[in-house]
Length: 113
Length: 112
Image 1 (cartoon, chains in turn purple, yellow):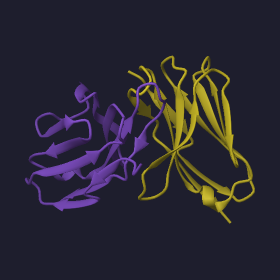
Image 2 (cartoon, one colour):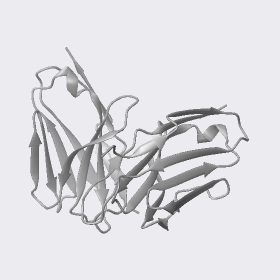
Image 3 (cartoon, chains in turn brown, orange):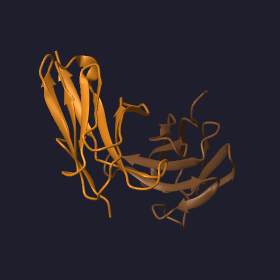
């Protein structure tokens, strides 16, 4: 298995632009998580899905962030409009109910200038 | 709200020395995880601790869990430079596979 695949690896965008981050979980995993990592806040859970349904999005600024999982093998995290404070590394992770712990993707480093 | 606290947050140690990283959490749980993160890289799973008294060892690292004290430790024996990384503990209070809450991370530097 190729693991959790995220794209792009790096993204530099101007303030106000739309940014879309993508994630392909491990086949068969039914949980998918989006985390944001910054020096100041550490690892924060933004949103997570179980069987494609949003279970908790309380960590996500809903005025500008949206997350979707249209099928079991793909998820997106969209930021519109982007702001400099969104600069961070965004990790996607997946897991399987009945198993323990996550497998993380390589992350997307987002810089908003 | 679940809080997970690690200490120390920064640790600089010499090769060959021993040290312990502590992870305290605020809500009852019997599932605790340790991850390693190298600079600019993703998080790699190190240990999964699933019951009170659980102890796991891999090479120079040993992790333990005391659910009554809500405390986990990561003990480093005879440190080597390759162990330099940031170590995170994380706690799971939901059903298996559900959300993890992470500590702040301990940045470990092992000096020759």
